[in-house]
Length: 339
Image 1 (cartoon, rainbow, N blue to C red):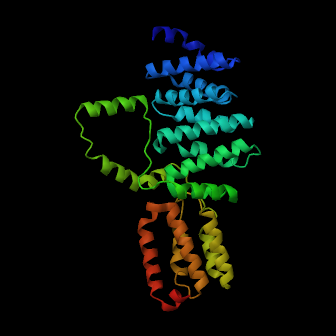
Image 2: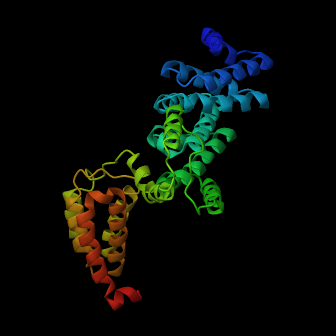
Image 3: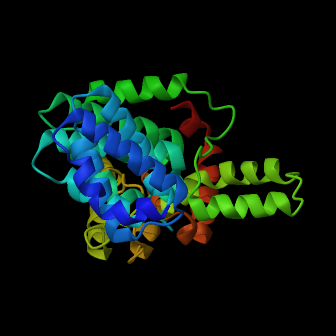
């Protein structure tokens, strides 16, 4: 270990060696070092990660690419959290070289698939993946789609708003992947950070029988979407859909105008998370419109309510009960049900 530590300052040179054979041996040496050392400082980790992606995954040699991918996961294990690594990945994803962008996306996908969603700050890479899906580079586009496949597996329907921005063919590919996925059990991380490995070993040594594991997995499944929801930045749409907007909608005399206005709201609210800056006027409007005698307006209001509640969730729990109570009354109207 002392020998490895003495030469660790040369690891960056090993990764970037222009000779594929020497590069491969250098990365193998780094893997041994990472297996024996439980902690690498964040600065070095970020530098090594960048080089492993650009020079390792970017190599034309299959063995080098494979070894670099393994080294990246081992490097991640040595961190207290993956925020620093993902910040470097996000910077790489925003770069100008398509090949590097594709490889940073590949590395991010591998990290997500290996360590699971709890280690990923989704907002750090989500917008980058959306832009990369539009790249003129086929490999970069493919890796972006792979991100959404992996993300759909881990984060569920909360990613739908982003997936809907993609090309139709990309959406279909992701949907096909998800349909064929075994969803009988929730996905489970295959890797742990080194300090988590130590905790797990200590629990096992302490005689934990694992009897609560099934219950924990069930609770994790129940809370999966809420956990993913919390990762998104809240979007404020109520500066536009304010009291003035509500008054104008209420005064509209043509049902088509009201329907169009409500559809505008649904479109704007079609983001994973809304900021509850001032939803009161909108809620008040929906309470009135849900009772509208025109079936088209009433149906458009239902869609708007669903979009509102989906974006604000627990923040409008009480108001949601009232809105859905009015909706149930609407369903007692036989004419409404028939239409």
